[in-house]
Length: 168
Image (cartoon, rainbow, N blue to C red; front, side, top):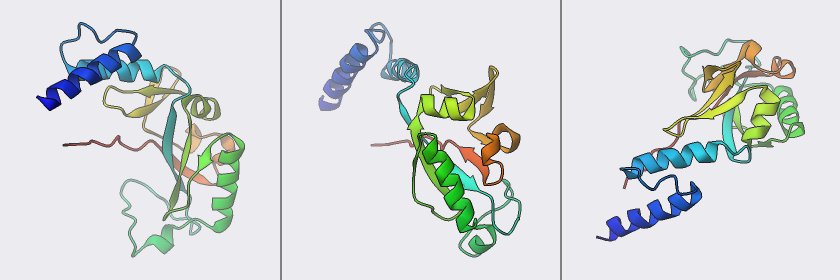
């Protein structure tokens, strides 16, 4: 009974946030999807992406490479790369997280991402963020020539993480 009341209250709150668009939807899930789409329209929503830097060793990083504590030194970026890449992101309105392993996080408003990376950001029904260039969905990551030129020397990939799933 308590859970049912909680869900009812959440649907009412979400319907207000969605300008009453949730009223008439058949499930809580449908209402949440409407809410996500409504929220995605706002360029002020904060999002976070992970920035994977080029290794100082020059080794290539790809999906076949598993970076572990045993080989971290082979894939670690130089301190100069970390400093340079961080400065670029800060200068363009991002908050830069601490360096962990071979990457750091960047956080900014959707509009900041879109302006800097010259893309649109699409938010999926499951909460994933995807880069869109010329009306074509690129996916959750940008790499190589898709990145701004000023990042080519420092950054291998910028990727949106998968959304967390919370279970009771």
